[in-house]
Image (cartoon, rainbow, N blue to C red):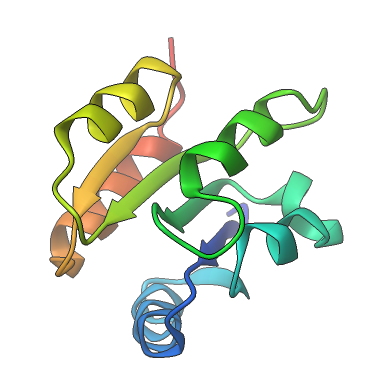
Length: 124
């Protein structure tokens, strides 16, 4: 069975800790970053299956990070954005540029795990 690799990006350490525990329990190999800039410098960023990123972070926002990643030739991961701010225009923009899912905080881990599993299904 192939490894399921996920990258979690959030500037809140507690969120990273809780989501890491959740996804490791679900059988994922988890890498974390505390900012979009840190994530871009990770050598494994091109090898993950799914990226879950906070929308609002110091430096690069989740949307800005996704735009930069889309420009990379070897980028293939599905991206899920999390937001504690229910901004409809950011939600619409994220979906329009190809973000797989946009979920509101506080996170329902059942919904998030389902969104990740859905994102990992082969797209036709």
